[in-house]
Length: 417
Image (tube, rainbow, N blue to C red; front, side, top):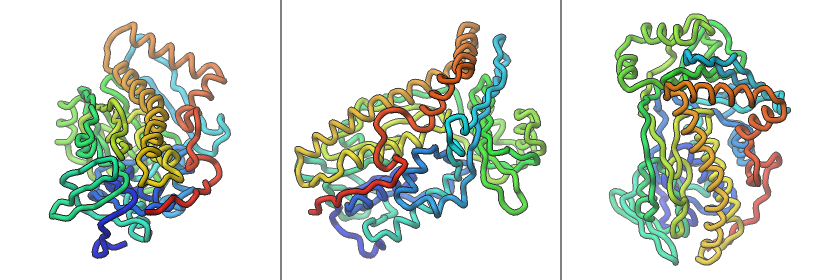
């Protein structure tokens, strides 16, 4: 639906038009809801890619969105971990293959810009979704409904609000949800690369004292058959130095850090830099409101968990609200209590485990080095534990939301206002 036909009311208002918000809009539209999305469609993030694991791919396939995205993606058939910390307790490189858990690939890696562009194009073509590329300037939440004020004037009435606008969520603040934030002495340098040697669809992660240094496979293109995305966590001071280098100098440093595993390297796009921090909320719901994505949780890019966790937020929320008449406050309250309960373990486990792993790389202490090496060797040496760890990363145990099951879901039509 075009912005010239903006309605003044909807079933679900989604705040934020990034990958999280657009994914939520498609999911609720498929459930029979009328949806308005308000936010800036950002398709110029330097060097950012998204590794989508099996559950996330099922999500997009169930919504008939993956066919348009797939040409931009590269499969991840393996994950290679290399200890490059210089520890007194070094571990041998570990390699995990998707075939060990009966998958063709752990997932697919796609440029964030391409994913968001395809999701936005599909939203514009969906008559149930109105995409407004603007901003909101206030919210009113009460038992009978919700309202949001557009910057520049005008209000949108909604029965439910999904807050997916990121770490500085205004909707979260208006709902009175407490947030705990912390920072790390790290900056992530991100860039797309083209290189001489093939990646063989294997993601390679070196663990260095400043944090992970990761190459993730990308789809090749004409003139650049071997491409990867790179995320390199370094100190802020080192990040400033790296950003001041010429493209050729930076590529040379990346090649040195990768120990020439991929041969000659060239940059294949602009360089991004993002300070590292984390965020966790005391709850993920408010009055007629639910948080998803970085409005509810944020952590460093280790293990490619970010958007995968977000899509589980969305899929679970859709399940909780399925079939409900959004005019009725009591069923919504019960659904939100279920959503709160369902998301607590998953979010807590991901945020805390990534925090521990990241800090273990930053701490220069023999006991910590020993514990990290012991844990990695232990989990990789025993087949059942090894496979359980891989499955947990790709398709976490626990109830699987409908959108992430192997067969596409059949939704009941939502009660309309």
